[in-house]
Amino acid sequence: MKRFLYAFTLMTVASQILAHTPLCDCFDNGDDTVSCEGGFSDGSSAAGMAVRVYDDREKILIDTVMDADSSISFNRPPIENYTVVFDAGKGHLVTVYSDDIER
Image (cartoon, helix red, strand yellow):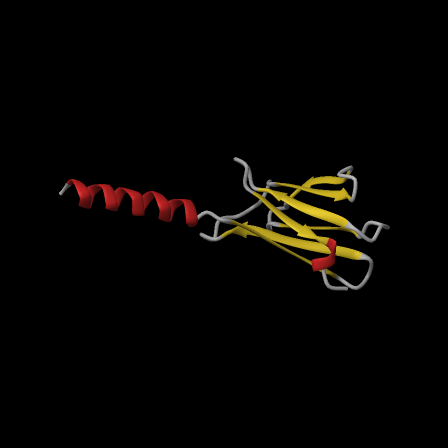
């Protein structure tokens, strides 16, 4: 019985951890702006969560938060290599590299 309870507890905790995985996708709008949409794997909103855009030397170019629709839009930085970081809190970061944002 102890093994069953241990296994059940472990599975419950693991599913709760996996159920709240942060997600973020960014795309080029074709007008020199980039949009990103965020959220969590359990369908939770990312409204108010931090998003930062860094240059290739880790200087912050943009420091903002997701809007009520869990999205942001910003002017594409005038540099080729930049990084978008969705900070979902508690050490949960999603990084999107400019190379992965299709133009």
